[in-house]
Each structure stands twice: as C-alpha cells, then as structure tokens.
Image (cartoon, rainbow, N blue to C red; front, side, top):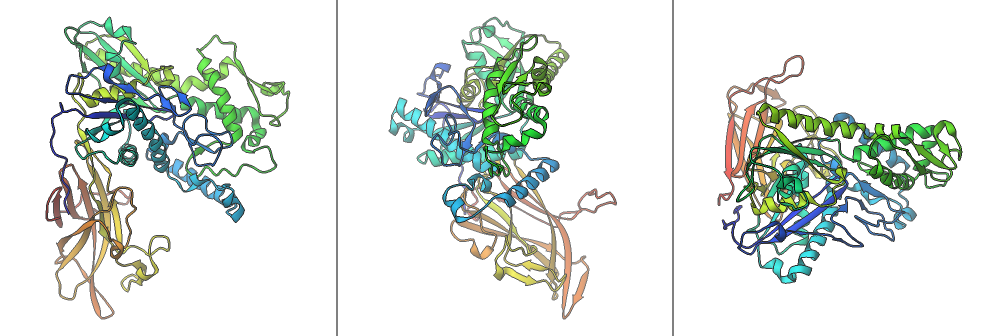
Length: 610
C-alpha cells in the first residue's frame, strides 16, 4: 500500500480555482482560470445560474420528497418536506441537544406507518435515514453541477480536463474540527462526483469566511470606503451570515503602488446569524398561539403531518408558509420606531379574531417590540463581536477607521466570501492557505468488542470464558475514516481505551493488531477483518511486554488482562501509533497521566512497505 502525494507544480501554472461557500441559509460559488498572467478580481466568475433563478447565491435547502418543483435551492414544491439549516448540525452537539434529537427521532418513528402503500406513494421521508453530512453532500452535488455548467458554458466542456483544479472551502471563524471535517468531506465527495476528470495535481485549501470576505472587500469597487483608507488606519470586516457572524481586523500597511494590509486580530465568531431570528419567530408563534400552535404541525386534516424530522430541521408545510411570509417582514425591519406588521395566518389556526393574541381578521399583528425581541440575540451578538475587535485594536494603540458589513444578514447583495475565497486560492495579494489533505486510509484496531446484532455477524459471536461476555471475534474498531481532513497545523488525534485479555501459555509478550485500508472515502468499511476485501490494506502489530502484568488462571488456561490507551495521530507526513498503560482515575472520575510507552510505530505516507 502506498500513498503518493501530488507532484509539485508551480503556482504560476495555469489552473482552475473553485471556491465553495456553503452557508446556513444561502450558498455561493465562484471560480477563475489563470492563464499565467497575474490574475485580478475581474478574472473571478460568480456562479449565478441556479436553475430557475439567476442570483448571486442559492438557498441552502434540500428535499428528498418527490414533488413538482425542484429538489434544492429555489422553487422547491409546496408539498415537499424541506430540510434547512443543515450546516448548524455539523458541529458536535451538546449532550442535551443529542438526547433531545434522539428522543424526537424515536417518538416520530413510532408514529410513522411503514406499510407498502405509504412506501410506494413516497409517504415515508427518505431524510429519516440521512445524516446531516449526507444532506450537505447531496446538496453540494447540485451546487457543483451548477459550477460545472457555468465553466463549460464560458470556457468549453473540454477545458476542465486540460488544467489542474484547486478547491477552496470556506468555513466560519470558530468551527470545530468535526464540522470542518464533515464540510471538507462533503465538498470533496461532491467535487469528485461532478468533476471525475480532475487530476491529482489540484489541491484543496480551507479559508475562514471573514478572511475571504476581507480579500474581496479590499479589491472590490463596490466598497468606496476602502479607497479612502490611508496608511496606518485599520478596518474591521464583519461577515454576518445565516448561522454565524464572524469578524477580523486589518491594518493598512501601504496604499500605493499596491494596497497591502496586515491581519492584526484573530478571527472570531458567534452563532448569532439571521437564522437565530427565524428561531425567535417560531418561538414567538408558540407563545402567541398557545394551544393552537399544534395546528401548525398538521396539513389541515385530523392527524399531524407524518414528516418525521429525525435529526434535521424539517418544518411542517404550514410552518414553512408562515416562515416564508415572515422573511419580508424581517428584511423590512430597520429598528424602532416602526409601525409593525401583520402576517396572514393559516385558515383554521386559532380564532379569526382574538384581540388578546393580536389576531384580527385572520391576521397576526407583530409589533415593533416583538421584532426587537426577535432581533435582540443576533444584534447584541454582532455588536459584542465588533466591540471585541475595537478593544483588541485599541490595545495595539491603533485606530479603527471603517467597519465593513457583508453577508445575507447585512443585506449584502453580492457573494463576497465565494469571490474572496478564489482570490485567496490564487494568492492574489496574500499567501494562499496551506493545502489540506485527506487521510489516505481507513485506520482501525482489531478488538473483541461486545457482540451486538446490529454491528456484527452471527458467526462472529463467542462466549468469553474469562468474563463470560458474548463478544465478536475478527472484529475491527474503526478510528479514522479514509478522506478525513488533515490540515498542515492540525492532524487527526484519536484515543481508544482497550481492555485486552491474552492467553499466557508461557508467552511473555502481547500484540495489538492495527489495520490500514484503502477502500475509498465513500465506502463504509466492514467491521469484520475477513470481509475486508477489495482495495489495498496492510496490518501493523504493536508488540508489548507482559512481564509485570498479573496472570489469572481460568479453567486450564492462564490469562493476563491489561488495560491500555491507544493514541493514533495522523499528520500530513504519516500515521503514528502509541500504546500506553491506561491512566488511573481518581474518585471523581478524572484521569491522571499515563505511564511509560508500551509500544509504538510510525507509518509514513508513501512508504512502499505499507
């Protein structure tokens, strides 16, 4: 097994640079083809043909429901179960959120009728078996198709096979590694599916949304404020999107002959984007309608809609209608004083006239005070971010001259982040982000886990004579998936605690078997070692000493039980395995330091022996 890094090539060689800006509420994409000359902003093409609509961005919406409209973006049919805000589900959930989602999924599963008629009539939503990353991948396939069509229309169908293709993936400033990894995998899978001719010479880069936005803002004629900045002055970029609001500050180092800046504060962000206002609106409906709110979860008949959210945000058709009507109100609101608005309610939901709830002639009155309350979390969060940036700039004895707002929350009509991402990939006026790589292997350890019906085959089951537990032999516990993200400064770190029982029979050494397998980033690897066929694979044995491990006699055999900690670290250079004694725990359950290393091994990428 070998993993060969892509051959070195000059950054000046002609190539495509494509940026995917996947957002919570809207997404954008842009691309450029360099020709060897110094590129400019004019070389960046914004994808604007999104099927039935010509716009600079496309809604981050997807449905698996068979309907007369589109399955993504604009003009999805009214009768579809629309999945929204999937980006927010990519981050690691809190324990409360995870338990709440599990409870809802189980409760809804009991209500669904999986009879033949419902299945044939597509009444069972397919999204119930889809993870958030599955939805994002399926959505990005459509985005990538639109990008390909745009390139082919402007450069010809054959051009894509003639040049390397670099991909830039933008993400929020504060985005945990799990979310970065899932976004990275989704974009790569969509890209590889839609651009199968792409050569290995292309690289993938990650860029934060506010930094990409800043690169565009500094070079865009749409912001005349940039032209008024002088050497020594500072400016703040605030990228206010649907899910997050991110910010960063820059110092102008030179104006002529070229405009040059230095980033002087760390990028920071908060989850206070425009979708939080939509959340507040839905909570407002619950409070205002009281017991009648449950009528919004029905289709007008006697039974609730059997939409089954599962792990996703899937609003009922009636709630979709009201949320859609609220968007115009949200975009029109400019703060107090304001006359307020009225929203047409769904017929049959509540009394037609109920002054105590602000309902008159079937319309719900939304006052200025109501709107202020809905906007408070997002506006306050944005102000706090700006204040944080101002404070950091003040501490450097510098002065902020201008604050630039971009993103859908700030009603910015252009796709600044997608265009800025292309500029960063081109290295135009900045150092391109370091290339990110995919793990070339699925990496696992052979362990006799407890046997379960849903994870193992019947033939793997055996009774462990040491602890009398039903276990699975020939079993692989996968720790790292092929295609997982490896950045230059942060690899993949996984810890697996192991309780291993070994037959002594006079042998004073034990061994732990590790598996490295190339099966493809989309394939789910089997959990049985004997079923691991196809693709290349190799094993690594970590041998450790049992001299100081106590022995136990069971029936006619002698066993040793050893508790260990396996640390797996994947960098862009290779995989490091380290086996340590399991650290002790105190009465509060806190772990101490692990003991001296039992065994270790390093597998460099490209090693012909693996």
